[in-house]
Length: 511
Image 1 (cartoon, rainbow, N blue to C red):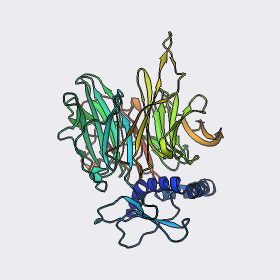
Image 2: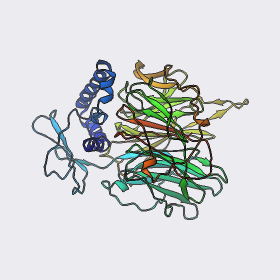
Image 3: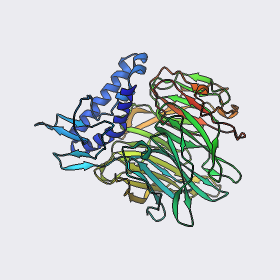
Image 4: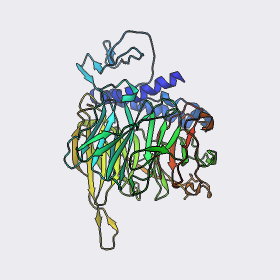
């Protein structure tokens, strides 16, 4: 398991830099590695048995950045690229050790170094702010002015887990008219910031650093309801790299307490998904008819659908619903985010990212008068940039929405701090239309008729007592979580689930 942990670090910290560098400086090698990656995936998926595919180590998937990895004792103090006489035969050298203080990625032969990564981008609930965070800290901008706003001071410590932020969610409390942003870091810590309108800055809420049972990487977070009505509490959920899921609630005074939810679990490999009962933690139902790979799951409960990247199209990485579920936005490895229509399954617009960079993360937001999409790239020898696109909403006399316009850039900011019912599934398939992948509904994925998570009773399981944790015995390598929470029961203790396998929780949604 220690080896898997090391390989996960390589996936998160090394692979984005390697892909970005090859795409810019070595495009021929980049294309060859991508072709080899697709061949390996096709071999595993189609030529091997289902059991062998499930047992394949997902942490050995380096997205084509390199095809082999080795370790040795040495004295390298920099993450660097090295080769002899043939630039087609080179090695990426990454020092790892407790006594290593860190350093930027260096390429001595090319004369440059690369700063650290951006790991998330997100909007505030009303579109006032957009934030980006990662290995270099947190930056938040005012969308109206495009200027960064004042935030609490954070040290630049990209190799200390507590200073690396990997996920976030936003709340707006109508009672106090307060914007709240909750950040999760790689040490299993949740930090709460709120907007102080008098000082025009974000401030850190006192005593709101919440740790899991033991420090683990927070993989993803989501909220039940972004806009919290008066006299109501806000709910959010976290998942960590030890396969635990915890549910929390927060009142308008930013006081945290425990909550519960019913959880739908999607297996990242193997085609399994299940629902855990909120009262017992036991599975309500388990299905095994899903696609072999369900990565980057996005849920639209209003339409009763979820979308997942299935691995059939190599350049597609992340998916997100937009425009009230009528479109799907995906991030890609070819310097753009693509917008697809759910009605036709065809691409309707390409959202370009400047400089040819990989699009690393995306986020979407629906406002009364417009739709927003933000993308951020990972070409990190240049300052990372957040680009925000807007599309106007139009309403006719019958109050139905008409959206004839396209997305246009409204904000283009440089990250100065970071520098750098039944549920049919929509899955990406390999069929191409005008050179771009299309997606189509997969009718074979269904849940049982009595599996409505809204009707599941809620209960409370102490988050601090490991003996009351639920264990998920999935015969797969990784899992993806999507959660539902509908009941506002009186506060008790917290609901948490856990898998005894070394699995990765990648996506959570509260609906």
